[in-house]
Image 1 (cartoon, rainbow, N blue to C red):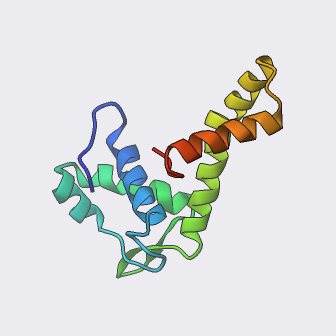
Image 2 (cartoon, rainbow, N blue to C red):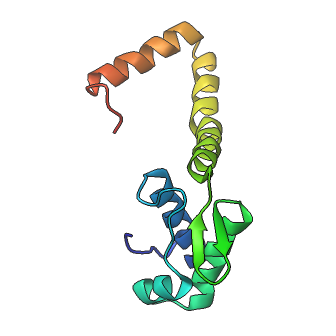
Length: 127
C-alpha cells in the first residue's frame, strides 16, 4: 500500500486503497484483509480511523465480517467495484467529452475514430 496524502480524510484513503487492491487483484474475493490494528500500525494512524475506512467497505457490501476471524473480501466485490468505477468514469469523463464533441460538431462516429486513433498512437495502451 502506498503512503497517504493530506488532501483526503485518512479513513477514505484506507477504503480507497483497499478497494484499489481488490480491483487490481491483489486482494481476491474470499481473502482476509488487514485488520484495523494492522492498518493502524502500518500507516501510523488511530485504529478507529482504520476501522472507519474498513466499515465504509462493509457498508457497501465489498467486505464482510466473519465473527472471530476478521474481515474478508466479499464474493462479487471486484465486479461491484468495477461497475461503480465504470459509472463514475462515464459521468466524469465520457459525458463531458461527448457534450464537448457535440458543441464542436463532432458526431459519434468521428468521436469513436478520434478515440481509436489516439489509442493506436499510444500503442493501444492507455497512459
